[in-house]
Image (tube, rainbow, N blue to C red; front, side):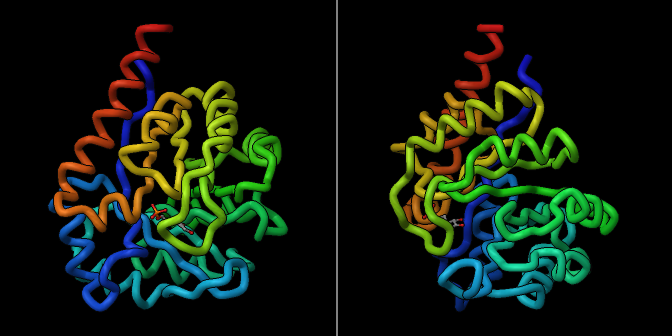
Length: 231
Ligand SMILES: O=C(CO)[C@@H](O)[C@H](O)COP(=O)(O)O
């Protein structure tokens, strides 16, 4: 048996932000496993979204059970750990490129009661992330499959080599992909070994988001099953 499970996390970046709370509820009703909340500061990436006050409002609206990952596309990610934990985030995913001391940051995130995720941009070698994980294990490794900053970009298939490499070294780790992931690209992600699937426009812009989520899930589950049989 494979020891990782498929989890689908809609990115709400491309939703109607005027009704963000309702959009989050809609995604959970469509059987999303978690919500992926894109936090951007206009410095680490050329776009601005929202911070911990909005995360707190979302938490109030959705209740305490649903899992929220905050994807911190910000410089100095260590400065928001406590605030995001108090706002109700469950997974705090920072960018390796943005942190001076990622080992320490992972410890601080856990001390605040959250899971720690570490993301890498397309130009960052996967070796940098593996080196970090060898010294300080994280809970989630997130491979960006677009340049972070905007939804609706094209999937970068060469990033699957990074996912494959991570899966080879860490058979039990939660490995995420983020950017341009939809029904046309999910098989590449699933076959490479990704199990946390962040998908924005493919879900949010569909007339039947529940079906997109179900189809993404079965693609990943099929690959997990095949991988189990090959072992
Ligand atoms: O973090 C990001 C972009 O920076 C992503 O979460 C996107 O928001 C995903 O949207 P799609 O590429 O799936 O439309």
